[in-house]
Amino acid sequence: EVQLVESGGGLVQPGRSLKLSCAASGFTFSNYYMAWVRQAPKKGLEWVATISTSGSRTYYPDSVKGRFTISRDNAKSSLYLQMNSLKSEDTATYYCARQLLWVSGVMDAWGQGASVTVSS
Amino acid sequence: DVQMTQSLSYLAASPGESVSISCKASKSISNYLAWYQQKPGEAYKLLIYSGSTLQSGTPSRFSGSGSGTDFTLTIRSLEPEDFGLYYCQQYYEKPLTFGSGTKLEIK
Image (cartoon, rainbow over all chains, first blue to last red; front, side, top):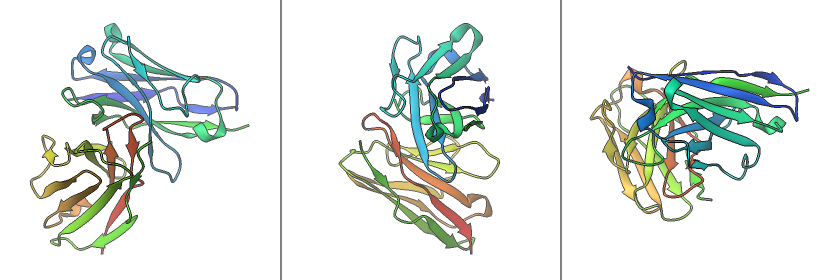
């Protein structure tokens, strides 16, 4: 069974940093592109980052580019999101997601999410 | 960025009925459109991709249609477990963008 379990969320002050982790199991992690998607309270979904299988290619929307860094450790089947210079608008539940093997950009497995609150 | 619009934020229907949820893209995205379902306490679930291709495990009462800018998710003969939130997403280009969601509730 495919499982994605996020951790590392919490309350953080504006301007500070936080690192999320996602532990993957039930599939060959190194074969898949992975992504982070977030959902602010009472809002819709927003794509945050995507990383290639080797980690050599990463993609971000303008809203987080330069502040967030996605990375992975294939030996540990783990995905990470380093979030720096956090803003109140980064408050959201962050989901780790696996991208469909043969269709780039489609997420076929999701974690339950990690809550991040940016507030003083 | 491609804006995805789900005009109906809320829809109420009864078990056994059929419903359609629409999604409109701000520019043509060919058929690069996916549909997701979220139910309280559960992870998001991919239902359909490429506009009309059912993901493995998606019941056949679900269908997707459309191309270009206008897309529809249809659920025939609603089951109690179908009630929840539905989102469309385009993957034609980055940034990947989602619709605002349609909440399907029991009437």
